[in-house]
Figure 1 (cartoon, each protein chain N blue to C red):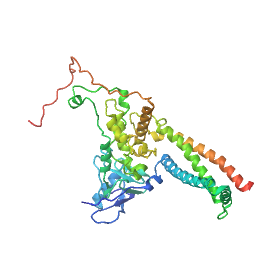
Figure 2 (figure 1 turned 135 degrees about the vertical axis):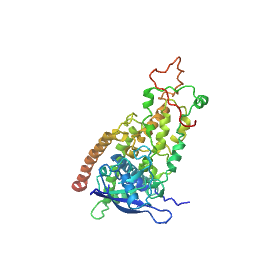
Figure 3 (figure 1 turned 135 degrees about the horizontal axis):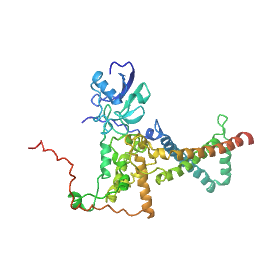
Figure 4 (figure 1 turned 45 degrees about the vertical axis):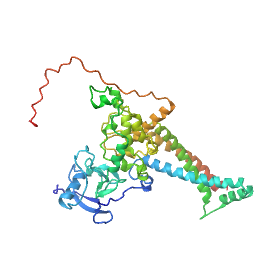
Length: 155
Length: 276
């Protein structure tokens, strides 16, 4: 019996979009942001839960001051991290709404007789993906301006 | 072919299970002429450089689906892709990802066919007697045909599974090819096997594992659009749950034609020459 060589792409297969279309990158980013938000959410519950537990509000205030004032290499890393969580949330939410419509079969068109050059569902819903990305960019732009203003000009 | 002055470097992944070496890329300089396909290039290598190079191919015209390969970063059929259309002086060819490699560019497609079988890809009728010994045809309108004919164009090349990011991480996922074929029969007005096809289609490794990366539809060489079929299958299940879908009534048998006569100008069939 000849030995077959395993060739499954594994995690690389869904993280790397390669030469596939924009939807493939949106797929990878949706999963990554989902995992990021989940990690943040678990930490958030842990930290917030401590206020309700034995530690009390003093520890909570201490923790918040630590996150606000910790600076590494001149950067407020936890504040920037909070902004990244916001970016992930915005992308995941807006793209998630697009995916709900797509998975309900609303933006992908109807089957027909295939004639070359083929039109396919991914291309038919592409304008909606572009629109969703524009909304994400707009919200991130507004929030980013506010973030920079507070970080460097108010404090 | 060898008169051509233009050359392209083919980087081909080599794997010989008998030697026990790890897969590695081997370079070949191939003279290119107008209209030459990637498959033609592989044939040139086999005829002129290395007779041990292995791949699978047959029809050379995008019908059999045998020559699926990972060419310059995308799963494609080697026979329908011209070298000049790749716009590169380097053609990197690897076996389809997400399948085990048997040798060189030969993937093991057994997984594809197992999953294809799992959706029971054939018409299932309650009237078994009529199905096995038909007395007439099942009725189907043109509108009913359009609901599924696009999905019936699948040539089982397996490119969609190579492109699918969910297949890359989940070995139990039914995959775009089989899910499309399951939906192809569910959408067929003649079919009554909703439960039989749906068992794999709506299982925990079925349509709900697809999150619309769209790569399967992008690489399909026949315009089958697996992404569309999977979303339509989800839509159908959703409408059924809401009770908003009309119950499917399978088409009946067309009545036998009465008092028919063949047209006068139809020539007679020739006498059989075999089996006399």
